[in-house]
Image 1 (cartoon, rainbow, N blue to C red):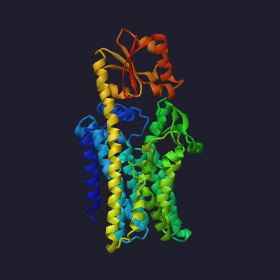
Image 2 (image 1 turned 135 degrees about the vertical axis):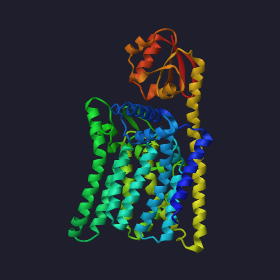
Image 3 (image 1 turned 180 degrees about the horizontal axis):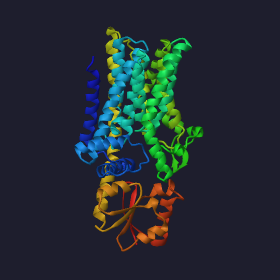
Length: 497
């Protein structure tokens, strides 16, 4: 069914558009989203004025597409939201194509391959967490779409042995890296499964004749794509400008972090309920992800591929999941969006396993359809509550900004933390980020009577104890004086005396 990928795209796009319409979401929330938005506008301005590209601590693929969209739809959040929206829908489409190719590679008959492709794609399309990040102004959906596309192209190469698919896969993986840094990790499972395929071709002569040439050429393509950006980022770092790409130590990876749940990072002292290894091991099972219902089918899928001796396919999918998990589990941060690259291989293995309960036989097709329907209904139901919780929190920040506008005079100076970006965009006050201040600089800023402070006090006193936000708050409280005005969410608004 040649129209199937288009139907998947339409369904995934419809779910995401419905989410935007239902919650009237503009695409902006939190510090990271506003950072992408502000940088994209700065990049657009530099482009129009013929100035050098301004520095950014994250890769540039998403901001560049944002700027391109802005020339059609204006310099507004919708331009960035549209990039994420299309990327999110394409993630489901590429999941369909990847699952279909992998099923064929494993020797499944065509009808069963189509069924696997549909189920894997629907799992990705209906994931509330992927829907959420498909409608925000951030790079996660773009990075995921490119990574899955690279997997699809690689699977085609493994099945057809046509070199152009390997070259395209390498090029798209390089672009995925330029959207989200962690996608570079996929080079390890990609290389592993490709080497295994070459080895199975037979003699060393055939390996050297075809495999070595294909591999060198593919790596060269990837290097040519990423090298200009790496050199630019390195030069900026030498000039003292921050860049995660040029500073591999930013991840602070350690195998000990798998068992830890407290970390000291540039984001302060972080405390989590579970060790990172456990947190990321169950991330895919959340209601907003693929739900715990994926577990038995995942196991069945692995068992089915092992029974068929589909070693290439197992190395491909399990290596994909392992490369991502081993990296994010060793980082001192816990964030669900870091686990997004785990979803496609788990969904594909789950879809293969789901097919084993019916054997895709016409007489038992109803059993498969019922099981798939139950899974998707549960996923969509749980996902709705996850999305609603996120949207409620987002609305809470906007309502807090409105409350601050009602409480403060028009010429107020507002010192803030964590909600700074929201306040800068939603109010006309002079906003000061307390993170970059010292007691001396704060003293110089406090001119006149209209000075105010808005802080998430529980976070400042725990996560940021002994660091600039907490030290500056203590200075204002003990040396200057604070008068509480009111609270919203976990934030307290003070008048600085």
